[in-house]
Image 1 (cartoon, rainbow, N blue to C red):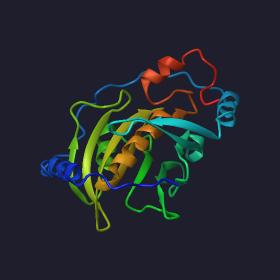
Image 2 (cartoon, rainbow, N blue to C red):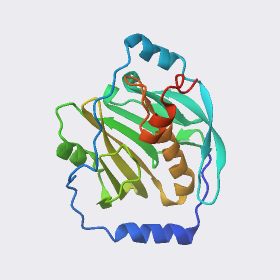
Image 3 (cartoon, helix red, strand yellow):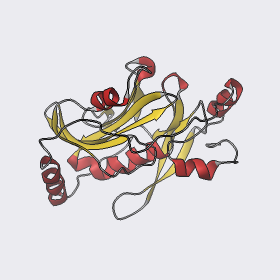
Image 4 (cartoon, rainbow, N blue to C red):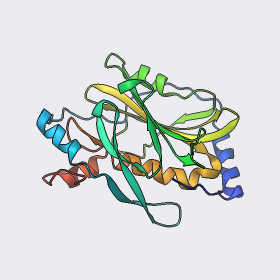
Amino acid sequence: MVTVSRARPLRACLALAALLVIAALAVDCGPPHRGGGPVAQLSPQRRLQLIKRWRAKKMVTLAPEGGRAKAEFDRLVGPCSLFVGYVPKGWIATTPQGCRRLVIRPVLDGKGLATAAVVVEIAPATIDSAEACDKAVAENLIAWQWRDRPRASWTVREADYARWVGLKHTVGRTLVGRHGGQYFWVSGYWPLEYADEMLPRFDAILANWLWTDTGAPLESERARNLSGRRLPGV
């Protein structure tokens, strides 16, 4: 179970004010920042081996603001075994739309927290970049902005946003990528007061993501570092 702490009120108010400045925004995806070339596919046997050898648990180093901390993460096999990774211990994962959607939620007092989640969505192969970016835009928006400078090396586009989840104001980010000829996006959102706990865990989920068809992680830097080594995660 993940415990959540109250963030500093002043910093939370400043973050909210910064997001509200971007109220009137277009959601045109615009040109992609970069794209990857074809990647060699693993054989079915190698792919199965990768999944089977993925460790059940892993200690992950988190980088919250002003420090570093260790946390235990549990193994995650993505919908239809598209990828493998890790999620914070005690979080729950559901697949409400089969291979197309994965929802990961923190747990508070024994229940999934409705106002915080990491959501992975895989688009059909027929969707182009403009339609993918349009579909990635969350509902009930207060503010939304595509970033000019991406944080990650694998993304096509990235956005920061604020939205309502029920009656709760939340903030988050969406990252749009492309893999195996299909677009996908990962969105994370949480209440402002939980940002110190949620953001490092959102980053850790992405940092420990491995595609099972290629054996490649999301981040190109990690892909270079893993080149020539044994199966990651074992």
